[in-house]
Length: 619
Image (cartoon, rainbow, N blue to C red; front, side):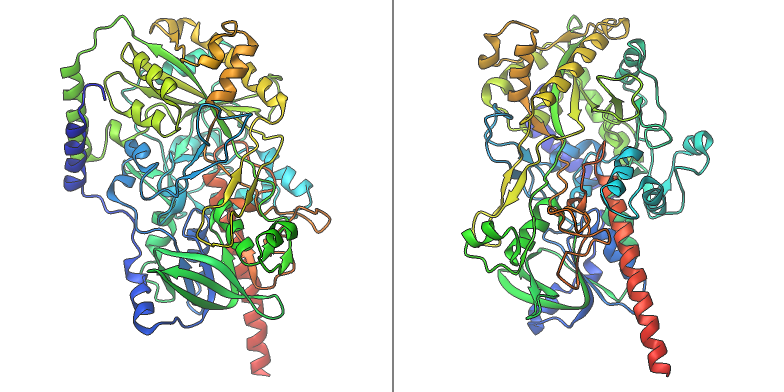
């Protein structure tokens, strides 16, 4: 583990946690789990929301703003730990008890160097917003215009922009100077700001290298034009993570009409004899309970768990459900249209001629820890160069829609973080050992090629009737040859960048990953890189689309443009699973936007009905 032993790392880790005045979000005041155990049942609620993730936190919070409505929020995980607050410890959360630790089915087209591809998802208050890399990226305006063109009224960019802004409390005043208030806002619950970056010279290397091969610098990838290279905002404030739970649930912790049950896993939607939703069945403390909703049930459990719950309820593809002996209540294309962003790492090493000073590295680690303890600043309050990204089109320099996103990660020699990083992707021993050997010889920069479009969607299926058994994830990565061609074009661009004076000043060299199956091919040939890409495929952890939003004419549509589950009254979905096409970029901000828009539609509908009921009573 480089200059720092495992024991040293554990001791320093505990020092951070014991000394920092950090308080992760908690809903202990509103948790009615013990009440449930004591009385054995729950009273009815107006709304039951399943999943306290990026969208569910928003929906539950916004609906509970109306004191007349009683809202219950069910979350399968518990409160976030202290380390979730520290940006630099982001990879410590992946693979922990706060992660569902999903894995795709093994494929003969992608991820050949792993036994199924790792799919971390947050099993925790705040969901994946509590374990992700905190990048605030909205996507491209054409993404949302396309959603509306597919028949989803009210989802074009102009419409959704106001929901992005409704959430936001932007802490970067420079963005207002560039674009006024057209694209950013202050006063919303979700704080967005810049990451600490003062000490990482690699930022300028990347940005200058990109510009020298023809790309423009873009100081706001969430503004008028997404294309180019620059630093994005993060869901951070004061050197700490700002999850959806912290933004939306923590301010609501004193609302008596909002109740929460943590560590409660929903298993199915309760349907009455008419096929209408009337509540939820869930597991809590190894017991099964039910809760009724008088107005609506909202599933915000994410692109894996939401379709799982629907199919366990008898809502899904008829043939698939019948094959498992599940009584079919509604034949819908649940679990289909699965899309994700794949991640292909392109490794470079730097500063290979410099002598590594292990003692100096230890001192620097200690200094950074105490800097964070005292002031919540310094490298531990940031994510290195990972907020630097490029949105490019590898075929058309004038295009306003990217076909790849380039993410970045920089690892200084002698630190344990690179080992943590690569083990999270589950590569085989040959690859892991070869990368760790290269890491002994220099600093490592990872340019991560993220493919923006998946040509052949995957699917989520149940394995059995057991509602707690992990579902089957068939990702269908790299089924279309054009996807390989796009990634190879991106590799050629990164090779050009690595040869610029900005990279060469720091002794940039390609890392030759040990791949027995590929090393027999001609070095640097397209055939070699195709082999490399198919072996090194990983996920960027952005699954969407499994309860597709679409018009009645679309046979794959599960929900309509107001997110009602087709043919099932009283049931909506509000999370990333409704996205008909994956956005061009990280999906956390778009998922929060979905939560905002869903809550607005739900509240508007029921406010109108409640007013009409009052008028009738007055008569």
